[in-house]
Length: 467
Ligand SMILES: NC(=O)C1=CN([C@@H]2O[C@H](COP(=O)(O)OP(=O)(O)OC[C@H]3O[C@@H](n4cnc5c(N)ncnc54)[C@H](OP(=O)(O)O)[C@@H]3O)[C@@H](O)[C@H]2O)C=CC1
Ligand SMILES: O=C/C=C/c1ccc(O)c(O)c1
Image 1: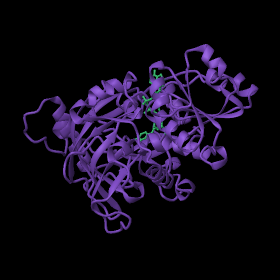
Image 2 (image 1 turned 90 degrees about the horizontal axis):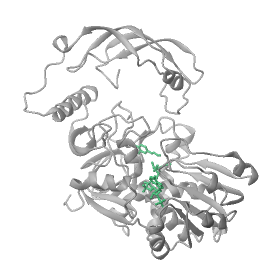
Image 3 (image 1 turned 180 degrees about the horizontal axis):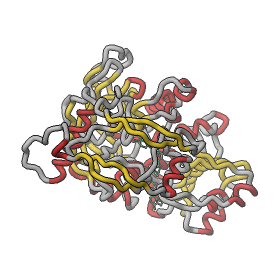
Image 4 (image 1 turned 60 degrees about the horizontal axis):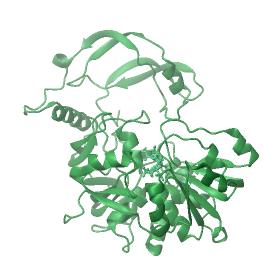
């Protein structure tokens, strides 16, 4: 109730409280009937197999307690005319603006300290079109840092969310988790940052700060993690990302950008960089004794090209495994890749059998891991970071016959992100970027979807402007 003061109506229902899958009686609160709402007395509810998936957390995205049911029939008991909320201001609007106003009104009702108006860019539905979107952010709290956004990288994850590939998008979604900018305000409990500092924000907006993972600064694995967009923040509000002019971030989730790094080419390090750095470190690829070992990078996009750069900076022998022969020359000449294999060319693939110690797979589309696993030596390790919407094919024979391991990795923790950023500062590692103006976001997304970028689009949100 603290989080959502307008959730005043008590409802009796039935919920699963955990993965045991047992349904128990559950009393909870629903919001008051808003201006665009209809209250329904539920008469019947079908039991879909999706309910079972959520009850058992089959898809790994259940937020317990979960009250299932999406085949609902009933009778209207309250609607607009009886709503306690008054009508919207009389402004000539087309449908989209009206929707935005309703949304903003609701957010303000739920989170009264969300008083700062911000201009950004959002997808309103699965059509995937990005449109200007005005919304509210919270006031700068005692532990918060307010940031004027200068640049924001366009990660393939943004595309997945914009198109609801993963089925979990809460529209309107303001994407962007590769954010750099300048501090404009700090809270009274903030010691590490001051106005004017060059900073970045990556994938995390909040975590519990208290669990075993948070204590180890693996906030990315906290089961209460709130992602930078499409997350649910401590106050119950939905988070909005860096395709926007301004951001309020908790100090724990802000990273210092070394003076040697430009804010535009450093921005993708906040996601693409840390997402490959973290498993490379975890699996020992960055240790001095790993120099000379053989790394394969599957997919030469935003994540992949940074993996090549880290691999080379730490003395690994790097092979790019790509569907795009046209990327070979640049990969060898600019990224200094030692080898380039076209994954659709069976001869080239066969010649690489049992040659690699590690592989990082960054591919955004569904594919089979079988031919890729064959490239690993016995005991070799494959780390999956690409997140296609459908499961990848994982045949057992190449795993068994090569005693190989497949694992996954999700972005990185905050301590590790700062460490990575500082290493990039020392080694002058930045991303290869193409700057996009805010009126070209849709064109850039279309090009990203058809694999036409070398290697990251970065939106110039406010890079040319003074503070
Ligand atoms: N695990 C995590 O924490 C994170 C995961 N991700 C995920 O990683 C994946 C890659 O992200 P990112 O590097 O930004 O994406 P990019 O689009 O920049 O790169 C993906 C690369 O995959 C290869 N590819 C092959 N086939 C396809 C296809 N049909 N569609 C798209 N790509 C294809 C391409 O490389 P080539 O031309 O060489 O074949 C392409 O450049 C995404 O699924 C993203 O959601 C992103 C951030 C964090
Ligand atoms: O695959 C990784 C996805 C990471 C992610 C999803 C949503 C979001 O807001 C993020 O900041 C990161």
